Amino acid sequence: MITQNPAISVVVCTHNRAAYLSAMLDSFYAQDLAGASYEVLVVDNASTDETAEIAAAHQESPGFRYVYEPQQGLSHARNRVLAEACGGVVAYLDDDVLVSQRWLAALARCFEETKADVVGGRSLLRFEQTPPPWFGPQFRRMLSEVDLGDSRCDAGDGRRLYGLNLAYRADALRRIGGFDTGYGRTGANLVSGEDLRANALIAAEGGRLVYEPEALVEHQIPAARCEWDYLMRLAQTGVATRLTLDTDAPRGRRAAATLEALAKYMLAVAGAPAAFIRGRESYAWRLNRIERLRQSALTLGYIAHR
Image (cartoon, rainbow, N blue to C red; front, top):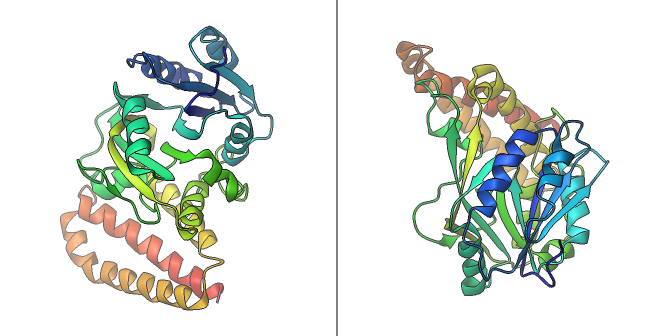
């Protein structure tokens, strides 16, 4: 069912997560959507599970469309639907979020009132099991928690707005060529950054980026994502993403970034004894370990790219 000239194209890219997708769509359609102007596009990115069946069950839902994209990779899926979206705003949601009751209304109101080019919503974590006691704020951010407060505010270059709950004016996103397919997750590969790159390019063109707390989603977090090995792997791929994003930066900026990373590494080293005393099960110990890994890898990476 195609909505004629919708204001907002809501896009959900998915790969082999049918159960999450079903809950996500149920939460979206549980909103009060009376009078809203929207379409919902589910992009099946070469799934081999029951994703197509879940989409078929929603085929008669208002505004629903199913798109199959055989080229594996999140950026490919996002670009495919960008070419097909009918809305003036393209709003991307991850397949494992649960949408709040006022999400669509809050998003539409923010674009109307601020004339923003990009709007990022609030994204809180919903744990499927109680996380370990050492699971502190930095690890929550690593799992894409976005909480910049209770009030709407400018978001600068969008460095703290993440693609699990992120909307663009379609013309602004198309003007920069969509998402760079050199970035973005592909299968089990955790390297990302396509959203941050798009945000930075739009900001560099003078676009306005805004954080809207009332456009709220909950990000479902399985127990496996709270395991230490997963977080270490996420930190390592985060370094690769950061270095790739900074490759084209001016030499002066890269030099400043090198010094910043080195300084943070030295702070982590200086704080290691106190963290060690608190023990492996403390947030301080785990954070110190992650920071030393991240900052030493960043420093070496920046030096190698000089």
